[in-house]
Structure formats: C-alpha cells, structure tokens
Amino acid sequence: MAFSSRLNSQASTAAQELTEIALLDGVRAAGEWFRAHEEEIADWQLELARIAAPPFGEAARADWLRARFRELGLHDVRLDEVGNVVAVRPGRARQPYVAISAHLDTVFPAGTPLNVYRDGKRLFGPGISDNGAGVTAMLALVGALRENNIPTATSLLLIGNVGEEGEGDLRGMRHLFSNPHWKENIAYTLVLDGAGTDTVVAEALGSRRYEVTVRGPGGHSWSDFGTLNPIIVLARAIEKFSETRVPTTPKTTFNVGVIQGGTSVNSIPESASMRVDIRSTSSTEIERLERALRAALDYALAEESSALDGRTVASRVGVSFEAKVIGNRPAGDLASNARLLQVIRAVDSYLENSSHVQRASTDANIPLSLGMEAIAIGAGGSGGGAHTLHEWFDSTGRELGLKRILLTALTLAGVGE
Ligand SMILES: [Zn+2]
Image 1 (cartoon, rainbow, N blue to C red):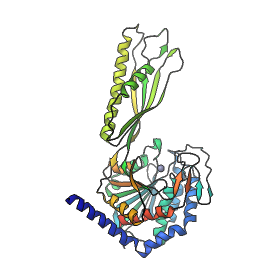
Image 2: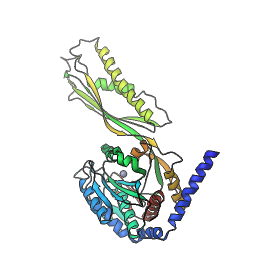
Image 3: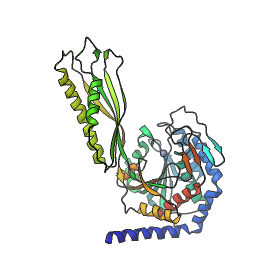
Image 4: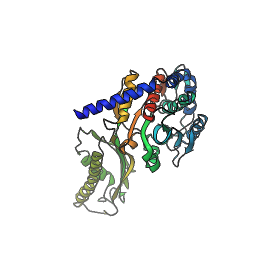
C-alpha cells in the first residue's frame, strides 16, 4: 500500500510539473513553432537523407550535423573519438545533463543509390524515417527552444551518434557511456528513433551474436578418409545446441542463421562456419546459452573424434574451433517507478496520446544496462518500409511527436532562469 501510494504521488508530481511547464507562454509558442516550421524541418530531413551514412561511414553526415548544431547556437559542438557529434545547450546548472540522442547511421551500404524526394506530406528515401526523423526532431527541438528563449534548469546534451544499426553494435552509445564524465553526469537519456508516437521502449532486448568457425587439415575424400571433417563437427554441434531448453519467461531465443563451408563434393573441407544469434530479456540467460553453445562445440569435437576411432585414421591433428563475438547488445529494464517513465506517461496523458511500453533493441540498451534511466521514442508522423530502398515518412502528426519530445525534455530538465 505504502509503495503504491508513493508511486501515485510520484506520478502526480510529474503531472503537476509537466502541466506548469506546458502552460508557460514560451513553451506554448515552441509547440506552435513546430507547425509553423514544418517546411524547414522537412528540408533538414531531405538534406540529411541525401548524405550517405553506411555503418562505419557516418563522417559526412556527422559534418552536416555539426554545422546545423553550430547554426542553432549550441555550445561545445564537437566530434568524439568514434565519430559521435555532441553539443551542449547550457542550463542554469551545468550538470547533470538530460541527454537527447539520435543515431546517424543507416543500414544501407556505401554506394546505395539515395533517391530522396518529396511528394506533398510524404518524404521518400532510404533512411528517411530511420533515422532521418529522429535526427530532424533533435534539430527541431533545439530550434524551438532557441526561437522562444526557453531556459532550462539543467543542461541538455545533444548527441548524433554512430553505430546503432546491425554490426555497428551500438558502438557510438557504448563509447559515450564508457566516458566517466558522461556516465556520471547524465541523469536521463531520451533516444529518438524513427517515426510514430505510440511506443515507449523502456525495456532493452539483449542479444549476442557469434561467428563460429571449425577448422581442420582438409584432404581428399578417398585417400584422406578418417580426417576430421569440420562440416560434420559443425552439424553435430548444431544438433546438440538446438536441443538447449529456453524459458518462455524471461523470453529467450536462439537462431542459426547462416552456415558456410567446403569447396567440393570430393574434398574434406578445411573449414566450416555458422552465425548464431542469441536473444533474451535476461543477461543471465544470454550467458547460459553462450555456455551451451561452447559445450555443444566441445561435445561435437569429442563425438566426431570417437566416431573416427573405428575407421582408418589419416590425421586428426590441428582441428579446432573458434567462437568470435560479432554482436553484443546488453539487456536491461527501466524500473517501473523511474521518474522518466512517470514523465513520459504524464506527457502522453496531457497530449491525449496513447502509447504502450515496448521491448526492443535500441541505443537505450547501453544506459539501461548500466542501470541508468533511458527510453527510446519515435519522432512523430508515420513511416514505413524501414531498412528498404522504398522507405517513407509522412509528416502528418509530426507536431504531436515533437511536442511530446519537447515536454518530456523540459519536464526532465526543468524550466527556469
Ligand atoms: Zn533506428
């Protein structure tokens, strides 16, 4: 009882703070600013989507964002060691920061034709929504605060980060939060990713990915028969690993997504490999599955060696396996009584926006896995065809998404001289 009444009083405090802020003249004007400047906002989005930002190739887009941050009067605009663009909008207190981030990278490899265009309220092009919408929302937020001279109590940290997609493996956020200065001084992180207003990602889906390679001496299928065969070892390992039991709660999954190996039908292969994806809402389960994968490989090697005992053995030396981690996204959850959750709920009820808490893998995984308060939300409007060349963004309703971001950021940072 005591616990739930404390939760209720926290929620009502967040709602009160929000209402006071939302009714300030400057904040109302900032809300209007979004509608009045939709053309300019859409132009930013088209402009940035025309600059390629493949994984590990975000530099040109980062340069563009640095120039926009400077134009918008942000302080300490700089590029960090891995290519993240960071800038500060100082508040009355220098610290702690409310961090607002949007990833710069797309899934599209270098050389992908970027056919970016506009047709009325619809914008088209690879990455236009994911994450053209998020980066643009960050600029719109800063623009609206600047035009309306809204001072915040604590400072805002704006981040255009690299490496969110695929094998980027969250490297931008990972680097940022490995810096003690940021880690110790960021109070809340608001990740802007894609379109929409209907979700709050407050639960980080963890994953670990491996490239497993089994190597042997190889040989002729007839004259070297008895040499340990990497494809057979791999097949035995897959069979063993696939028998691993997984719980439904916490939800845990595994997949063997790619297998490769061998050169011809009459050759004993020199190598065979597979790619394995393990996901869970619990880090403990991810680690248990990782151990099961290694045990399956040990078992497969031993089994295949003993199967060979009955045959004429040509060579069994030099057989080994290697399991290389090619992806590692940590899991984590926002506590149900977190202030950030109270604030976004209060904002959604104030804006009469319906949303639900979702679990996903986003840049918020990094702060959440460190026990810090973070959520990922959309930038308003609607989108589709993510990760395809036919991606689109519709700006109808963008204003709601931008107001949602504005009110959340201001309630977290506080408004004041
Ligand atoms: Zn994204």
